[in-house]
Length: 455
Image 1: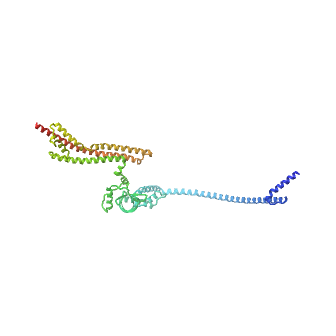
Image 2 (image 1 turned 135 degrees about the vertical axis):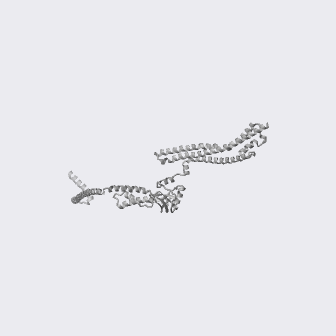
Image 3 (image 1 turned 180 degrees about the vertical axis):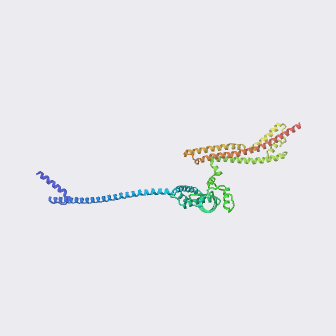
């Protein structure tokens, strides 16, 4: 009884669970029928899935068989290509051997031709003549990098280009060409070319720019004597004309125009150089002033010597004479007093006659010392540049070395002239002082003689 009750309760629970998804079930028979139908439907679905799986399996097998067939075909084609490659490689080797056998000495000729073409292209790339014949460099470069034997036409043109370069090297040509100004502006102008050595336009020297296939006016021109010669050459129509020629094909000209002028050299001395120049300028002005003063005094003393009896106060000798005998009341009876009075008058004139000479001697001594200071500063800059760069490149040391050398040169350049000037001024002043001493001594001797006569 209890078992029956449990079965009934389970059936009721099953009916209560399934009923919501299957619809309303009136009794157990309908529930059984629905369960059988669901099982049949599930079996049918499984059968459909199985058929689909078998169909896909057959299709995959067919694709696999097709892929296997293609792989075999590609392997066969690969073997065919490999055999063909081996045959072609063998044929190439045979042909190369045949080519080498038939070329013989032409291989050596080909190597020489490429070398000559490359060397010639390098030389012509920097030649002024290339500005007139611009296509030859490209031909020579192509011939130098060729992988095949040159033809007879190419060999003839190589010979022709070399022959044309030699011919144009001995010719002075005047022709219109493209000129590039230093600011980048380009225009057509008449150019006079002296072989591959030098070229000029409108009195200015030009250089060749391989990158632009044109001539460029030098940013800095050589001195006027060279530019004047260039103008004369451009204006000449026949005959012989003096003209500058650069045997290094423009290298020496570029180095020459890069030389710094006087002011640029002075600027390299920087502060020390300016101080040296200031000392030299002051010394020169003082020496010039004193020179004209001594010249005027010497002329006045010379006039006084010609008229010794009439003393004039406009010259040292006249003032010395006036100090001794200008006033009769001041004439002393004792020779010693007269001698002291004359010496006083002479000493009074000496400072003006030797004026500025101590400063000039100081400038002569200070010039080399200031130059030495500039040299030490320049060497410090040089060593500092070496330390910072870690190399001894001359271009990096050029600033310091230039400052050191220029300071030394400036110091000596003011010391040596001022030394001679000071010596000359000292000689002129000594001559005048000697005249004063001679005349004053003679005047004293006359006074003593007159005194003896009176006695």
